[in-house]
Length: 266
Image (cartoon, rainbow, N blue to C red; front, top):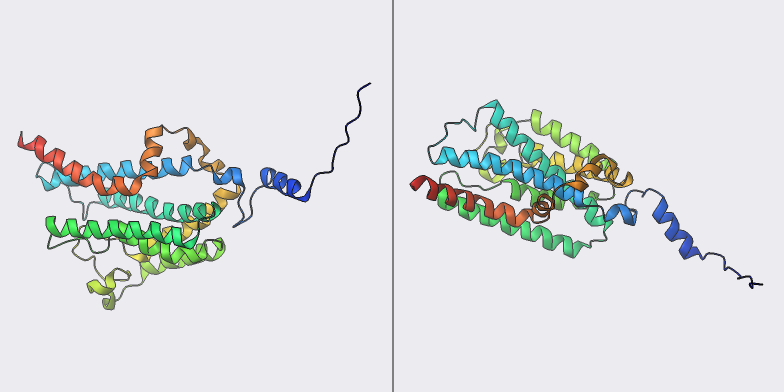
């Protein structure tokens, strides 16, 4: 007769681990399985990059005189650009939620923001060479770096982030004052006219997307990313683009302009 095996009662640590594995996460206390599910976020970022490639390719064709397009006034191009910027800024909020869920500490977060800031500086210097009269002084990378710093303290306060995002959106679209027209203040927003620059993403209203994205990121985390689960099956190359978005962003324009220059000379 087989001898009965006496089972030990589960320890409190085992019970806690089982609860983490089977229950949805609370804000700021994510489920481990949900945290590791970032392929869909990478795919979203990759899609935003592809849209940006299409926009910049068309812009470069105009630069070389091949395409006649009014990027500054045509509703199609203005809407297309707005969607791209809104996607990137919303993904800032998603990324902050995921970074916190994965246990990222402030020093590591600041190093990441520092790399983005260096990328923004590189974009400014490159634009000074190509477009000295309309160089980029506060474009998408500048806005991402500053907004990331502003949103980090709210990483575990989605309700406050959502309220702030709505406020910044409404204020940025409705409040305007000549005080904010000079370059040293126009990066905040609220200006009466768009400055003469190749890329302009002021904090108001565009920073609102990052705060709203932070709140949406918490909702996605609580539901284990079910709303975007289909993107987990995106091609690996698309997710690769999303994982390396900064270096891809910095390199794509020199490559596009160089390829077009060679092709058009021929």
